Length: 247
Image (tube, rainbow, N blue to C red; front, side, top):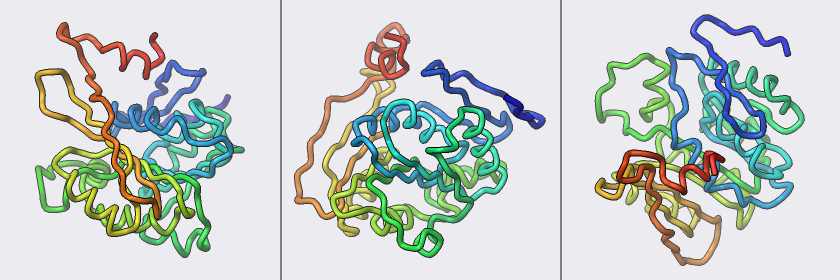
């Protein structure tokens, strides 16, 4: 396939169903959080319609296309150059019939999509509040890591508007924002249903959490078994190897 790579772009093999991804070495590259949330959401129903808020280079939709039998997935990305890169990744993986990109701020989606509803919303939003942490970063990395263009509340509010009744919501975030996430979800009628904590190893504090919510559901939270990335020898654990399809 004829894909023109720009300077600093590279093609990485995802080592899963022959899927690949183009990444720009100078911009924000995907990490294990994208891999974990795509695995967390792998049991979405067949023929689901899905939207990924803040899709970046399209890594989560690409993995979901390989892991599920979804009908359609839309990736929303505010940065024009990153959205263009995601479109190249769609072409690279022959996913034009399933995966589309919208170059837009998530707060404008209600009008952009003409009130279209989805079975599933998935998101790996910026983790840091606008005025927290170091910000001596490129504009691309700043937008990817900090709530510059949309807040956590904006992501959840958009999700509420986009979901069908009893639709599923999936998010990965940092533990220090857990109370914020839970509070904002419930305030927007997305009931937290499943929580999973992610640790680097058994001696560390939690690094990330995965959460599933359901729109207009009754209260009941299930906390899943912890997931550890590395074992005592600093090798990937069995669980992580399975997620990476190495087992």
